Image (cartoon, rainbow, N blue to C red; front, side):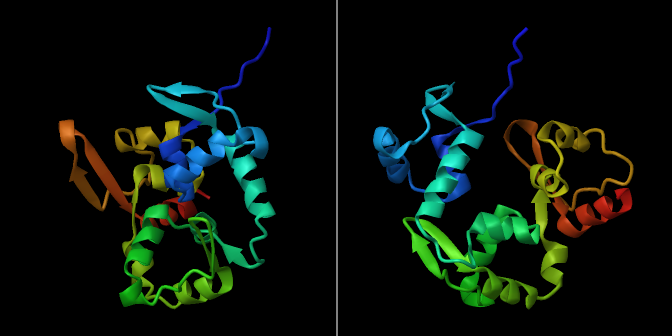
Length: 195
């Protein structure tokens, strides 16, 4: 019996969002795939082509390494991972840079921005501690922060485990759905009691 493994696939729009890249850049790389090694699509989702997430990330990472980004720099995603923040929280910090003194990027490669990791960390640690207390996460972001599989965390809204925090906010969406937002500090407190 041949075992088949389900690969996570991403659309071009998801790649744009995840990596901060423009559509025209992605289309150009795809057109030039014979020369640059860009992965072939692994299928379709509706009318959109999809790519294996791991294969695309490996290709892009090797491309970024070849771009000789100076040492000590970090992307938004790398900063988010290092500091346990959501991508949304980093976008909000960047949008409020005139008021909060957010550092300017130290390097640009195409549309990708890189910050001096040490400078950014020093700046972030100087922010009032209340910011971390107030940061709100979606259920999916809370799950990623805890390292939970998406299929595990989605049931928390209807069947929360013992000690799971109540939502700090509930935003009504269309069709009777609700987006629940949780305080980052509450999610981390839950993790501490479980650990």
